[in-house]
Amino acid sequence: MRMRSHRDLEVWQRAMRFVQGVYAATERFPRHERGNLQSQLRRAAVSIPANIAEGHGRRTDGIFARHLDIALGSAAEVDTLLQLALDLGYLSADNHTQLTEELTIITKMLHVLYRRVRANRQLPTTNL
Image (cartoon, rainbow, N blue to C red; front, side, top):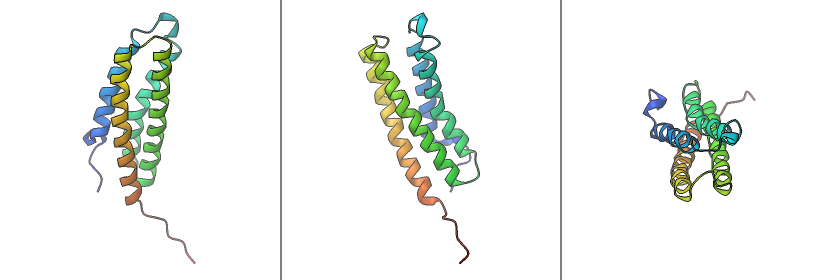
């Protein structure tokens, strides 16, 4: 059974708060990174809740699962970009740890939801 709205999903709620944290953390990036790493990190972070919402708004579990898979890919991209920002000295170790710990929780929640949605998906029947 589907929830009425993507807003009811705890993973979407957490992902939205995570995006706010990413925006706050990247606000301190050097000016020359504003159109580069800052922008890419923000877009990848936004992609997580955006794909959860878009997939939930579609009519089938298969499409929802596909969007959850995309959200998982965006989470991996964010993880890589956060590490790069740390390595370049744009993020403090504490800020990096806080963001990556929350991202780990979101990623685990996405994996669980993905498996549940895939398990509910009806396989197409073929005419033999």
